[in-house]
Length: 207
Ligand code: MN
Image (cartoon, rainbow, N blue to C red; front, side, top):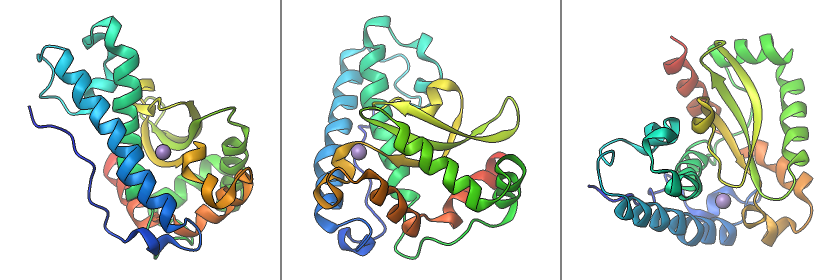
């Protein structure tokens, strides 16, 4: 099988300054993300290989295909790998502003307007106890966007929901710069959200 690797970032560690500091970015990408990658590769190696050809999102979506005693590890390391892979993509130095197109329409339908969406997403982010993620997901069953939170590295894929936008609320994502001020981290993060990427992701899914 091909081993998972940490992805290359399309921007430098210091390019999300002042909203996310360079040291946090470097440690988060090179150390934390690497540890999920290593854990995922090791776990897949321990499980003998019938479903290895599937990409991790397919594995996460079908936990029955994993031997029961490996499910926690796959959720943690596989979720950690994929959550962070998306997290780097949905940020950009030229980010911020508003979504456009079909995503903006969906946000208006289900959250009244973009400002209200931001308020709800931020409140959900601050409500997480311990470590976790806040997400804007696409719920295929009901053909709608939703805000959800997950614990630890649990992935929306395990709930059969497709993550569009994710915010890492583990302390390792913000503590060096913001310490306990999670609310400042969340409000700063909107300035680096890559709405073009998130909007394209949504358009591809909802066609
Ligand atoms: Mn993280």
